[in-house]
Length: 479
Image (cartoon, rainbow, N blue to C red; front, side, top):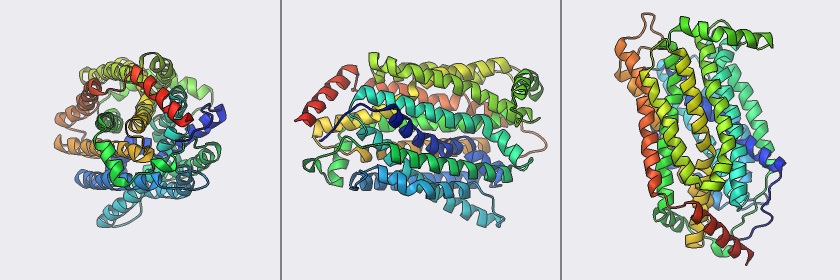
């Protein structure tokens, strides 16, 4: 294994982080609005929306990701293994992002087919871009403190994307479409596609691959898969990633239903009016007069701002106590504030916002650690087997991400349908449907988080082992 200077410049860290900002303009939209787009904007029945998200998601998880990972690990170019993929997919990913959130005037059957085709292409191109991008973090440096640092930069960028999507996107969609959400979301996605494409190109230009496998470390796909099966930290991270994204998709995609159908709009208006007036004084007026979309945006804003603060504490805590310990403790604490949503009344606006803020802060500490831990698993595999297969390890984690997103997004429509939710109902929702919406933002997303925290008791890469692996790999590479 050959490596050169492990120190990364600020420019490279920022350039690398822009790739995740671009990816999350798409990914956060999928988490937050895909189910809502299909049921309330595009006009699919909940059962058909579930079928599209479920079957396409499974194909993407178990088909696209392993294939892309195996090919990326065997890509050889003057730009490296993973950077070329970022270049090749930048423009196609932008185009399909717009098409997937467009509403063509087809028959109902035609709309279902269109949704299947565009969602399939979107997940294929997303895997082809984001999987090599994620694997790049494992070869951009072998220094674990630098890896923790670049993960923090990366996830601050993620938070900016999440902030825009969850805070501003719904009000801007309504504003841009002059009340027509179908028109508004096409306009917004067009601009996001352009911005995201430019950012991916910047990532390609500003980054380098420093950890380069030698000829002796070449392996077959069968050997790579065998290494994975016997890599217990990888197995645990696969399940942890899946569970994490089940929870993120569940709660992220349910909040919009929670605000539109549960929260008392009059109390919400009273609570947010002073905030909106202050924003108006500084020229931010696109929240408009819709208290639901404005409240939804401000609710997400509070959580994301404090997530960013939490991310800032992640690196020093992980450097001192190890990634595993910090991830487990703060994942558990953050889950408590999700569970509290089950006990809030429709008028408990202050408590609802405060719980979101505290959840965001404590969960924010865990955010950079997941992907840094996966990069550590790639090091662990090299340390144990003397072979490095970075992309296939990350591809397996992307299986977990896509599987979690698929399960979580599908569960939203399944649970809503089970509790009798009616999209755009002029008569309002039944008490049973309202209860289902409450459970969607509280108990259901808390369960995977709690199981994930428990799994970390069996994850063996603690602080001491991190140091041992880093030192021994460094010695091998120097030799």
